[in-house]
Amino acid sequence: MSDTLSVVPPATPTAPEPHAGSFPRRVIDTFLSPVALFRRFGARPPWVDVTIVGVVVGLLAFALIPSEVLVNTAQEAMRRQGTEVPAGMDPGAMAGIQRISMMVAAVVMPWIVLAVTAGVMVLLFSVILGGSATFRQYLSVVAHASLIGAVGSLAALPITLSTGVMSSGITLGALAGGMDPDSFVYQFLNAWNVFLVWQLVVMGLGASTLNRRIGAGTAIGVLLGVYACIAVLIAVI
Image 1: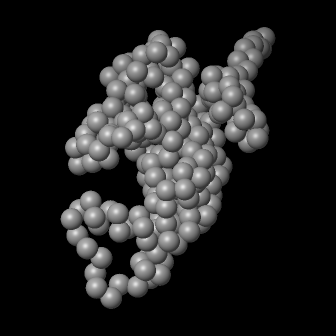
Image 2: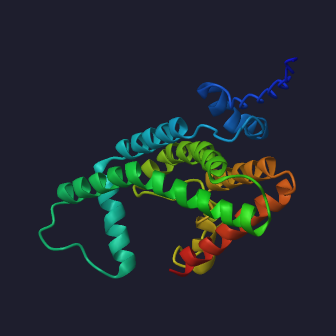
């Protein structure tokens, strides 16, 4: 009687998960080489650390805004709505309430916007256009691109301090000099923040890099087109 030895074939080695890079490298690549960054994304690219940094930068931008600017901004918003400041309202209290509400929004809203935007990218690029990237990958793309918007909030500080009211930052509204600020054209152009456009372009590059069948021009055009619809709503409202 002879024993038959069965030879078990060796297991196929699992390919290592691509490493997106260290935190400093990812931050630098977001601004200087986003395509190289997104090419290093695996199935579970990091996103929490850059989101936290974006939140901190946003908080810093709000903290540097003087109280009188907050008061002027609130009064200007009431003027546009055709209302007046309530009698006896202390400007200091108004500024304090507005600052607290803005700081809370700066902490909470980025996480909500991040999830919603990633979900929209899944719908646009994975469902409608047939891409293969996952929600987690889009989440990381949006989180990294949001660093550009955070820097934009700091870049808007000189404009805010010079005008005395919170502005929309560096926008295309500068091309409509002398135009009625309440007009549709001015409001539409003012909705196009230069840093936001940069952010959308980086997000489009991320979508095209993760989905080889979607070209960069198509991905960027889709995102800019969606935001153009939002800009129209902003101008109308």
